[in-house]
Amino acid sequence: MGNPAGVRRDFVGLEQRRREAAELLRQGVHQAEVARRVGAHRQSVGRWAKQMEEGGLRALKRAGRAGRKARLRAEDLRRIERGLKRGPQALSYESGLWTAARVAHLIEKECGVRYHAGHAWRILRQLGWSCQQPTGRALERDEDKIRRWKQKRWPELKKRPKTRAVRSSSSTKAD
Image (cartoon, rainbow, N blue to C red; front, side, top):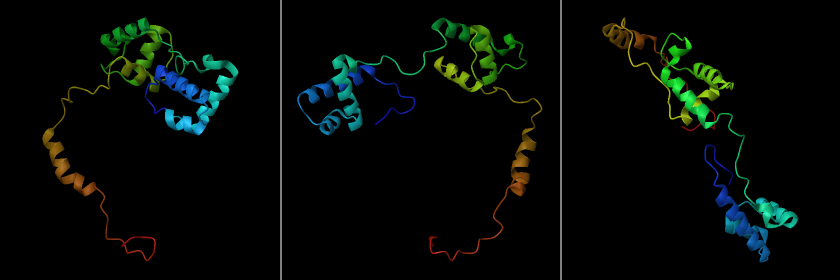
């Protein structure tokens, strides 16, 4: 069963499932049957039975949250968003594009919390931001030269098989 990556767990629903399993166990239903009825693994039902034995129904209470507590508060996220809207030039960067390293620098400067550049994008997604692409093209760009290169030079450079390979006599290969 498990919890697929990126899917939030329904703690209330999980607790209800454990309570339903507890009721079935009290009625004398076998653990394997309880597991089938509530849609859980048999080993989980065994663990729940042991927890119930030791601590009663209170032991099956929901956990409340999963994972580590957030390092940024709601006010920190608002400060980061304001910083993002000001743009990277406000942090003395030359271009107007945000990179992961720049976002991590912004988070550290605004909130005093150090994030690896690879994890800074999670904060951006949480704020509803996405990857940026340059809106313009280089002024020096010559469309005719690019078109000619694609039509003439690229086909010359592109690798192609020289000749057909000799057929294999291996019995494991399909004809």
